[in-house]
Amino acid sequence: MKLHERHDQGLRVRQEPGEAIRWRQRSLLEAEFPADLAATVAADLRLDLHSVLELVDRGCPPELAIRILTPLPDEVGS
Image (cartoon, rainbow, N blue to C red; front, side):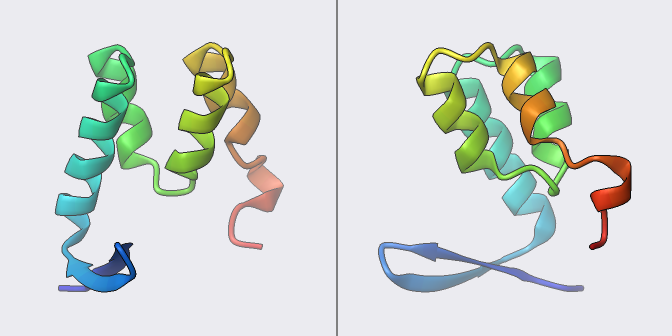
């Protein structure tokens, strides 16, 4: 089982992928994303969650923020 690392207050914390997805989903729900959209975005690890939330904080609708930040098919894996 592969663990992902994240940084909390300058400390490295190892977490399982499922835990990271749950954290992402909670963050999106706290930002008032609809539950189904939050689940979809949380599971798509290609999306930079912080960038999505920053666009939404600046007034961008969630669906548009996701569309802006979703990699194009030819950019995946590059």
